Image (tube, rainbow, N blue to C red; front, side):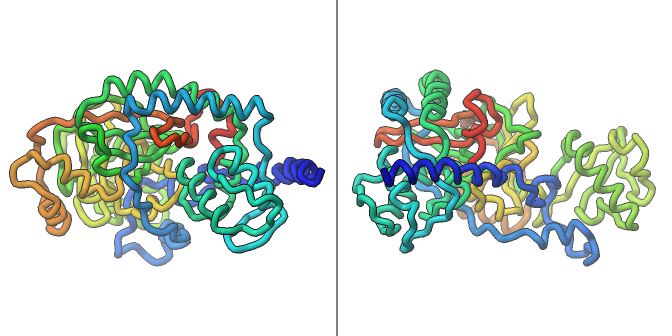
Length: 426
């Protein structure tokens, strides 16, 4: 009876969680301006500078263990088993919803027995602990396992994001697994022996060779209104310390509005971001003669010169595709520390990109990790053709399972799988 009352209270209190905005819905000041950090010559009263300085640090990028390849035929039976396991959970009445309390290791709370039950049903906790209210080391380890399976930082703290993941119904998880099975069957069987895969919902990059993950990287992918596309291509070139040609969509949505704002304040956005403007004949324009209120500014070409705050960072990974997207470095390393990393305009920013590039150039004479890092230090502009092109896949997988029996879930952030808003909200 006590447990039933606790579950009833949990359901009512979970309504509180629903009013907490998911991470992607909060205006954190990062996503609306795609350029790098400000120039040191920017006036102190610049409102954009204040916006940047008001950001709370999110910590370093998460170091990801290699683990199992996502695109592997060895994952097909585990995902089928996971579907049956979660269907059984649904048939047995599902799991209780967690109330809107932050729970921390080492503390006691009335909601901990409910948390234990939730973790046991999903298989993250094997020792029941009965009605114990203490958040002990067993519960902490189980919460970390749950967080890792859901792409959250394994802090062991039941925070808002973890609560939202807990409160996705098992029937929704079944639909997620089913929606991804057919796609995974097709992708896994077609994957090459050596390739790079970007899983967009996981905001994660894997370098895979001979069925083994060589390295796994945290990534930043496209915002909800500027989505990263799915695609298949081959990496053919690495550009060190490149110019950044601003895409037309960013010119219209970001650059021109910001330039007009700056002009009203007597400032020059091109000088601030070390950019040049060119007309249709390729002539470099005098920034002081540009009328930002005219329609002509939408037709100019804008290029940002290589420097420490270039929006591409020190390296760009090139592959042909109709969407004009690519992978690259970034000066905004703090974005890698967030659980929800849909912050770009469609391209993919890669943490520890020097390691990925060194692996790609391994068969190209004269290249290793030391030389790649040297290019970062020297700032030398250089385009390097790969000796052997490497297949690259941009995929959209929100659920999969691995041979260790673990089922993994991610935000259906672009809502492509029709599983409902709850799978998008944590």
